[in-house]
Each structure stands twice: as structure tokens, then as C-alpha cells.
Image (tube, rainbow, N blue to C red; front, side):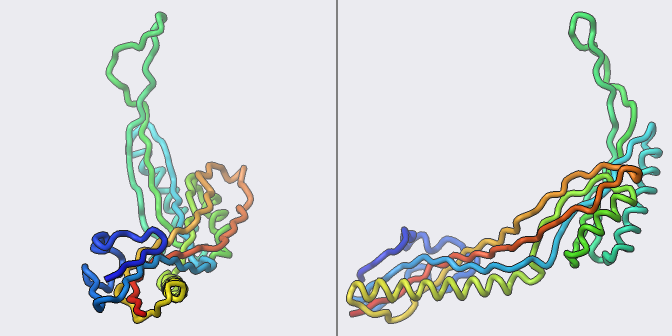
Length: 250
């Protein structure tokens, strides 16, 4: 069996490595005297996102743990109510972080510059409550952020743009990758004076990487409200890489 390799394809033994999708036997079998050609190809699909994820919440501080929690609960209730009024459904709001931690007094420095060796002293408590929000109407994102800040949110992180149906984009990229692999196989076969008999194996690896736009950690008051931020969703590129083995014959 003769072998041709294109674009630094992995050795045949590497084909047994797990992949997202694999339709092949560990050791490809072709007709005696035929040639095995390995081709790497990439396909991509570019689409506008239709979904965004972001986190929002409230951090409060009080002299006691109960005071910090009570103030946090009051403000967080306002934040969740504001989200719902802005059109966010209950199913798209999920608690992502809820914590209560002591705040310690800074160590006291002595005249000689050293730090006084004393046990840490708690001076307050800090409560944090954050929710993960799924924004389905991207045109309303600025309005939602404005509503959150008005309601008392002092933490906003995001958005991370996504596709609500990423499989559609993946399938489009797969079709393009296989088409490219076939074209390259035909090119190499023709250059070598051979013809493509068929496909022996296909293995796939892919990536779907949203490009986030960050609007990070808003801290403001109702008297100092910032205008709703302009947010550009741009495009998301879905990529799929395939390794295809073709059987060639004279």
C-alpha cells in the first residue's frame, strides 16, 4: 500500500485518538497496490449571534452578617424585578454566586515599620449575590443594563455572545470542510496520475469560540447614572477541522 500525506497529517497510529466525530476503523484497509492519501481541511461558518449571556449582581457591606445579608437581599430583589420588567423570563435568570465573607481590619503598623502581631479583627461583613442572565433580544441589551443599574446593581460582567442553534453553523462548516477535502484529494490524485476511488475514513475536530464584548463591573448610583452602553454583537465564526483518508488507484 502506498501512502500520500497532505498538510502535515498525523501518522496512521494517531488516528486512534478520540475525536468529536469519527467514522473509521483504527487501521484503514485498502486494496493492495492502491494508495492511501490523508488530507486535512478546514471549514467555517460566519453568523450573527442571536443570544448573549452576562452576569449581574449586588455587593453590600454591613456591620453584622445579618445586616449585610438583609441589605443585599433588598437590593437583589429590586435587581431581579428590574430584569423581569425589562423582558427577561424567569427561566433565563439563574443564581450563579451567593457568598458572605468577613472584612478584616488592616494590620496596624508600629513606629519602626513592623506590623503589630495581633489576631485579625472583623470590622464588617460583605455579601455578594450574582445571577447569570440569558439575553435573547440583543437589541434590548443596553436597555436591560440601564434598568439593572437603576435598580441598584453594582456588578455587571459580559456579554458573551452565542448562537442559540450552534449545530446549524457546525453543519455548514462540516459541509465546507468535506468539500474542501474532496477538492484537494482530486487535485493530488490528478497530479499523481491517479483517481479517487473513495473515502476510507473521516475524523473531525471543531471549535466554536464566541468573541465577548466586556462591559465590566458597573458601580454607580441613581444620581450618577451612566447612559446605556452601545453594544456591538459582531459575528461569530464556527470552525471545523477534518482529516479525511482517500483511496487512490491508477
